Amino acid sequence: MKLLKPSIDHIPAYVAALQRGWSPDNLRPKAAQEQLLAIDRDAASFVANLDDPTAQAGPVTLPDGSKVPRLPSIRRWIWSSEFCGHIGLRWKPGTEELPPTCSGHIGYAVVPWRQREGLASAALVAILPEAKAVGLQYVEITTSPDNPASVRVIEKAGGQLVRNYTANKALGGHETLEFRISLAS
Image 1 (cartoon, rainbow, N blue to C red):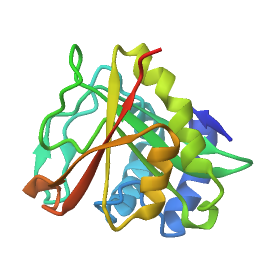
Image 2 (cartoon, one colour):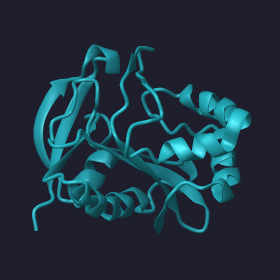
Image 3 (cartoon, rainbow, N blue to C red):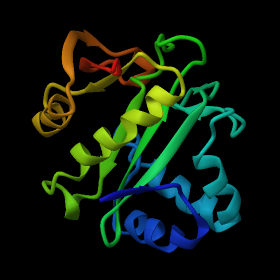
């Protein structure tokens, strides 16, 4: 498994996953169709906006349809002989704090046909040095209590449960588990 910076060279594999029904946003399944349209309009811009450490790509659409300012972020494609999913890191410069409409520093999704291979666990461990490089002392990752596979991924990477809470209404208002992974040496 390796993490790739999104590129136009690999966009056909990404498009194929979207066309097979995978969504890069587990809270907004319709994001897949939105991305296919964006790729059709301008694939190069689409790919460029996935890696956005200066937050220039415009607002983020939340599950309730509202829009919020984008945080600096990077996205990496999980690759193991083919496109297997993605992992993203977002942060607010100078602090570990995130706005209430941001569900953690790291989010990931693996295509269904490649789940249960340890790819999410490997990708999470692999992106932690990038989180440290942008100045974070720790990362917060959230998941649903109904997603034991995601809980195991986070715990394997050193995640410790911090709290159980109800997510912001704009994020769906569902029960959420928040984990923290320390990046201290």
